[in-house]
Image (cartoon, rainbow, N blue to C red; front, side, top):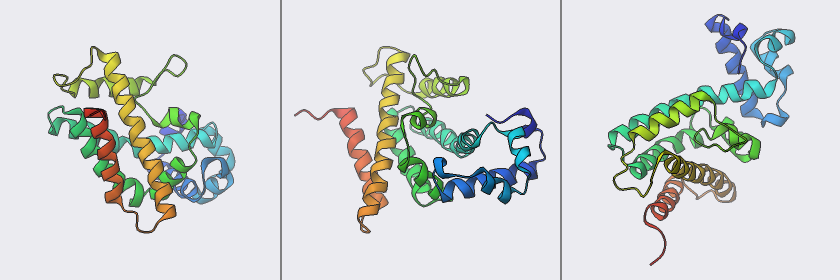
Length: 214
């Protein structure tokens, strides 16, 4: 997370630094990104950068958090609109979100993120997952709690909040693997479409909901 010094900056300077992050992290993956390029674009001294962020990874995941917020709000709103229907809520969420990821303003950033994601990165960008070694940030825990409270459990075979978290984790993993597969499919065929991505996700979701055994 940024330092308090960053949060005390004028809004214009914060926006300039985040825009520099967007440009650099859209140009190349995190491991290839250059702090020198970021400070040049942001027009700040290199020394100032370390007053705001620990390193480029710190800035990277903060920038991701800024673009993730809208998606989190959308998820909550959509779940309310479908009266807590877990699968219908995720279906609507994915249908809306996938267009932003593939062709929206941050499309290049997302492409670099998903095409170069390793285990460590996945722990940071999938907010509703946890285990004993990787306990979630308090903010993510609160988001997960709020989402769980919105879900109608009357049609689900879940016994408690822990099982609900596992189910959400399973669906979120399906979201991310579908996105990663979409990038690979687009790179192989110009005829592949967003509609096909959505159809594949809906199929996977139906398998989770109804099972695949005859």
